[in-house]
Length: 608
Ligand code: BGC
Image (cartoon, rainbow, N blue to C red):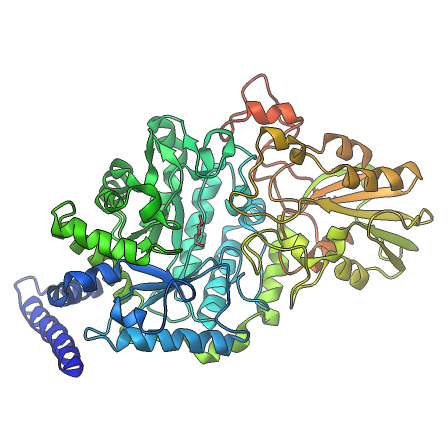
């Protein structure tokens, strides 16, 4: 029976396409049938065969663990599987691919044989797989102001994601952070809408390329809209700016993404005009889908169905639901009941399913549903790491260089490298690295900042983890300090935690200890946002904002020792005091009474 239906489905599609091609080819205008027209025809043919359960299944996204048990992909007609924090599909990439191949076969065994989309939070490289190339977080890419490079980074991320079994990434985050207290500032490129638009275009092009090529993936512009503009930077809080400001400052990156064919847009956790974004029909349907002509998938964020209004989010315009953490049956049964009781129309369901099928056809998944084993050898390859290293070098922003202490001479007799951040690839990479919130632990394939310094320096290099080593005879101290890894929610800084806007007392002491003994101090700041470091800047002889560089820590030394010049320019204006955070509310919003310590775009270079 299954085989019969499969054949039937496929023949209806083939027949439909032939008939369509025939009439089109012989009409008066001799119009050629476009790829898109063929896809639309296939979608319509397939949709006609689908039951309501199959349609709701397509609208469902689950994790490959916890949410489902064996057989669920087929019996619940699941449309998409994600991997994020939690048990990995295996250790090696072969194991990851084989786990997803198994699930894909299960999906293909259903009577209509619709392939799965496999999505992953690959937000700075395929950062969920240990051994992949991990790039600087987007804030660092923003500092490069280099669209060509961002495109290259996205291309590699796509390939390494495909190599581990994914055809969809939940990236790029195109938010405009209004407030550094938000724990996701680093996931976004910049506070500047213009720069974000430019880098969004590059990122979408790099990820998606020619979508039907199996080395590219579907990208997601997230989180629509106002995620970075909540009051006090609270994740999922209230975005209380006006619609006019949303239109002027926040929508352009999405428009750019849509114009460049982005396959998905993720709804955001925040409220706007008193309504959760997931349930905000005017924004999701009228503005994004109709206003921008977006024909792709609007995907919910985590547990969006139970959190933000159940079937109402479907009516507002959500097409696919992240039905995780106990939401699977609740969503599928709930939506079925809502359709049966006419709370959700069949037209809305059909529109959602069409959008999902459209992307599956565009990705060529019906012809090419499985991951390509030949890509595995490219994960973390030399060539990929070279690009990541270039991104690290170009992301570094030189904020101070007193008496041209930099570049450090390679022949310097003794260099002391201070701070746990200097010798820990987990610390230098931030959140969304191997695990969701990141970890202060080394991971495979990465080089640390200290590794790089040792490679470049020709004199003695000693390491002093916590500035107790008393290497006061050193000619230079390279002091690496900054934030410990965090991601969404955990990275928010609220009023009581405002000390986090500055360096910890311990880190302040590292700098002081060496400075007071007359050693020249070069401070390297690792952070996901500008911090208030006015005093430390004052004390240091040189100061570098290096953001969250990722796996290629050795890129930093190449610039410190003068093999390359500094190129990075600030993607955010830089606050002078903790008080400034209260005044800064919006991009380029330093009102006249508050002057940033450094403006957007600031960055020194070595004299040529
Ligand atoms: C985040 C998204 C992410 C999703 C899937 C959510 O909590 O807000 O950015 O893509 O989880 O892991």
